Length: 273
View 1 (cartoon, rainbow, N blue to C red):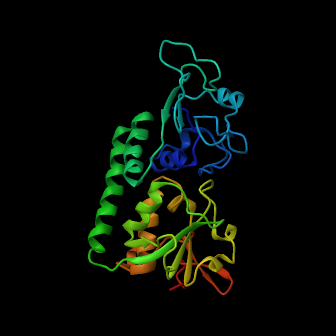
View 2: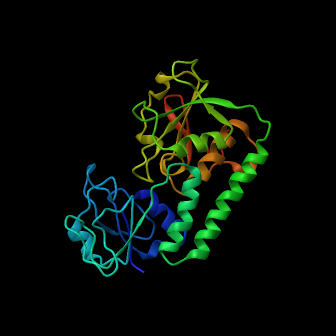
View 3: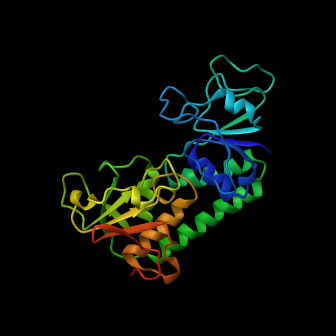
């Protein structure tokens, strides 16, 4: 199957399902393993394009001859079996367009099963979703009765990041977000840019602590900002940072960093406490 993803989060799901080799086209901000893919989007944001946050390069999309396109949503002119493609839609004829637009952690998990169905791998989609639910359930049981850790969640420019899944990940780690106008939280969680899986703490402002007192942690995009399977990693990482429920939950290197002495220390590194 030839798959195109118009969303970095959908690309993450495809890779987690084991179908990364079938990706023939991705956005300019996707970076799936296994070599380069054709870029089927242009830079910048296309607010008027319902298929995704980035304008679609119709010629590049047609050139890769996709069987399936994963988009944020479909448009009224998207291909329908037995009908011609409507005017203004960049989708090639006869392609199956599937929407992936989760609003919270629960719909991210549900979306994993839907993408599994879209790429003809129902079993793996159900298995991955079940694995995500089991991990979240174990985390909830392990943290039962643990006092909530107040945190302030911001992005690299100091705003509250969008996406209901951000609040869900924070809550799954037994953390509570500080209310606007209330007392400053003793810790700040910095959600890195959701556009690229390779967004790392080096991209974050080194003076992030100026917005709030206490400790400052930066979380990789795929583990907090971007709605894919990595959100479970983010919940486990924050739980380990603030509660240490189990030593096996120590974050993998490149997942979460702590601001220390004007630089970022990788919490997943063996030498970092």
